[in-house]
Amino acid sequence: MTQSIDLTDHFLIAMPAMEDPYFSKSLIYIAEHNDQGALGIIVNRPIDMNLATLFEKIDMPFEPTALTSLPVFFGGPVQTDRGFVLHRPIGDWQSTLAVNQSVGLTSSRDVLQAVARVGQPREMMVTLGYSGWGAGQLENELAQNAWLTVPADPHIIFEIPYGDRLPSAMGILGIDFTHLADQAGHA
Image 1 (cartoon, rainbow, N blue to C red):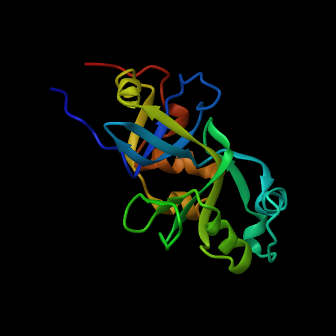
Image 2 (cartoon, helix red, strand yellow):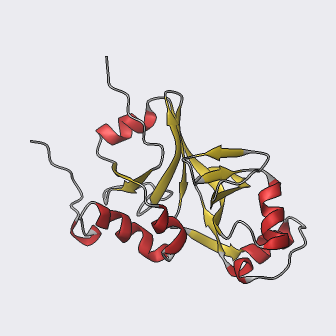
C-alpha cells in the first residue's frame, strides 16, 4: 500500500527541466490535495490585466483604491474564464475553500464585489484559471522529479513582489534556483 501525501498548503516549485509552457518556472500554491487529485494556483505569473480592467470587463463598479492597480495572475490552464481569489483572512464568502486557518480560495463573485466596494480583503491575489491534477497524477509527477515541494509561507504570496516569489520559496529549502540542476539524482 502506498503512503498518501497531502500537499495542501504547500508550494510546488517547477524543476528547471519542466518544458510545459504553462508550468515552466512556476510557483504553485496547493489549495487542496486529496485522493481525488489536487488544485493549485500559480502565484508568480501575472497577465496583462489589472483589477481595474477586470472589474470593467465583468461590469462591476469599483471605488478606485491601491488594490485596483494590482495585477491579475494566470492561475493555471483549467477554467481560464473563471476568476479565483486567494486571500487572507478567510472571511465569509459564498464559495470559499479554506486552505488553512487563515488562507482561503474563493471562486464566488461576492469577494470581488467586496474588493470593489470596500477594498477588502486587502491581502489577496486574483487569478484567471487554476492548476488541477486528477487522482494520482501529481504523485506521479513528483515521482518523476517534475516538482520540488516545500510547506507554503503566506508571506511569500501576499507580501513579496511576484518576481521574487519563486526564489523566495527556493530559499525556504536553502536552494538558489540558478544553481538547480535540470536532473535530480538518485542515490
